[in-house]
Image (cartoon, rainbow, N blue to C red):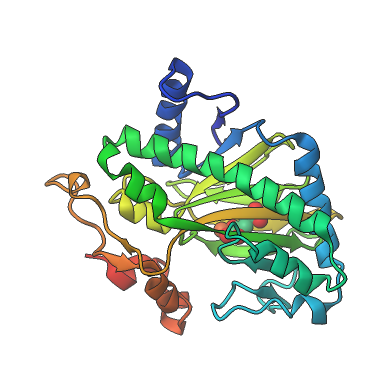
Length: 306
Ligand SMILES: O=C(O)CCC(=O)C(=O)O
Ligand SMILES: [Fe+2]
């Protein structure tokens, strides 16, 4: 089984191709919560240089990477975890706000590395257009246009670069534990090494096999909640085999601090009873990172399920 592939290149609003892509998006997100997107607005040389820059950053000494601190768990430097020894990542919160990527870059390379901040910024800005197209299509296809501006305004972007080292043995090894994303939409790009697996509703694992021309788009729990369960937020994990490291870069749209995620009333009726009470996303994350949240198979349901 393969993930659906949807083409977003040269899409214009209110054209037949837009409408057809919208139908595919809705179907893919209801069924898999995930699809592969081709989107050639981001030139191949930029995508390649972002992967090169990502490789470079993980070659920095550990004490430098540790400078990337965050008061939120799993947001600064993550690595050296016994559960997932192959995994390392570095996150930049609200990365598209002016200066954020420069500050991060200067933390990693005090002597400066403008090519890193420039590539990652330009890449992320252009990719945020894909995030918005997908969300626009979801909102339209659910007939929720009157909430469009509010919804599109409700998020900012976390950028996270990640490395999965090659396995230490000849066996396939766990790169990242199975989880659902907690945010709105995640868009992933990787080097040519596969490893991301997405669980279907009936429990099978599909390996994402994006090309250098495509991105993996995935729904998180907050969008699942906002659509009152209409969109699926799939479990996924990373499994590593072979003798090369995998690198990926994620763009995560996340409800802004203080924004209350609440399914519009149009999403709730007798057939679709309310699944989650309104919640503050960042308070939910605080819960998710407690022992109780971490051990819960469905953290959002445990936190604010009706
Ligand atoms: O590296 C990947 O492809 C997946 C990463 C992931 O699932 C995450 O950061 O939430
Ligand atoms: Fe994830």
